[in-house]
Amino acid sequence: MHDTPGALRLADRVADIEPFRVVEVLNRATELAAAGRDIVHLAAGAPDFTTAAPIVEAGRQALADGHTHYSQAAGLPALRQALSQHYATEYGLNIAPSRIFVTPGASGALLLLSALLLNPGDGMLLTDPGYPCNRHFMRLVEGRGQLVPVDASTRFQLTEELVAAHWRTNTVGAMVASPANPTGTSLSLAELASLAAAVRARGGNLIVDEIYHGLGYDGPTRSVLEVDPQAFVVNSFSKYFGMTGWRLGWLVAPEAAIPGLEKLAQNLFISMSTMAQHAALACFEPATREILDQRRDIFRQRRDFLLPALANLGLDIPCRPDGAFYIYADASRFTDDSQAFCWRLLEEHGVALTPGIDFGHVRANEHIRFSYATSMERLEEAVARLARVLA
Image (cartoon, rainbow, N blue to C red; front, top):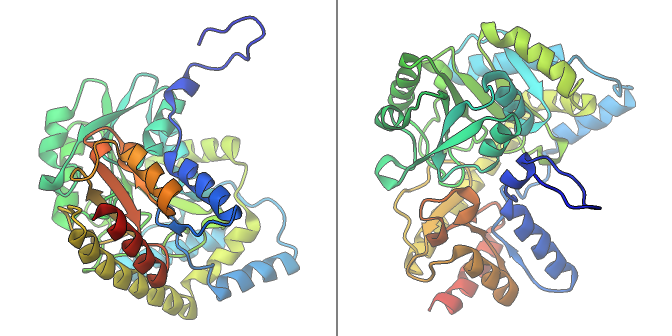
């Protein structure tokens, strides 16, 4: 990046990392609300519920007990053991605690994996549309997210055929999400197996973002580790477990990756929030899980209300979302500039949505992401406002 006299000199990579537009929407929505406007929030990718009481109480107790020092770089041994037991209970898998790294949010896991797997110039296959920060983490380490156009024909997911068609000489792996942001679609066990085989056949690594596990509505959500123990899995305490502000996630890695991840975690993070890790131990208690499962049922009810309501307004939803808390809608009947459209809905009608341009390039200007991480009452109000606009 060239500079002019008196200008601040920045690294070239900064220009390549795009803004996270949903954050811009949220900031503006907050400003409008502070000015007295009634804003319906359908943009945030975060549960509207506060952290469950048993988790909060465990955090308070950790502070009272003086757990305010650094933990091990890979996480508290007790929490890694609890996560190992979680995989045994939920998926019937025997995952050694040594393969589990606790991270500062799933973002910390993504940063670790980018640094671990990508040399400068290497590429990683990603879906377009998909979570935007993935490719920016890769750019940070001088790698590249190689965007693969996907559509409703594959439920917006990668397939073995797409891997074969888009693999390049500098491709070192593929990353998918199940359930996915922004589409809410999941991969079946057979699809995960075929995808893993396609990546392994080319000597690559497969990363699966499973941060919305626990928020599946039409059947069990399967883990790639059931069919590929060598895959890398990213997960989070933010979504199903509702610990967004605690900034805690984890990753599961094959044994061979442990030494490299240890070094990176020590240098990049030193450790995660010790108090948050002690609080997270309460996530796996039966009383906590009962609360969280009740909340999942509420998310399902919201999805089942919003899907037909949006369709009745003329929005096209070609793939029924089976997980997460998003609906990715085709709004081409109403706009060819989803960013301007979303800003107008926010400024003039008090409805905060995320434009498709946040998630890639393929028909992005024709799509909008709806988050139903808000109350049924507010969803009903949003639909009423949209009906007045779209009519």
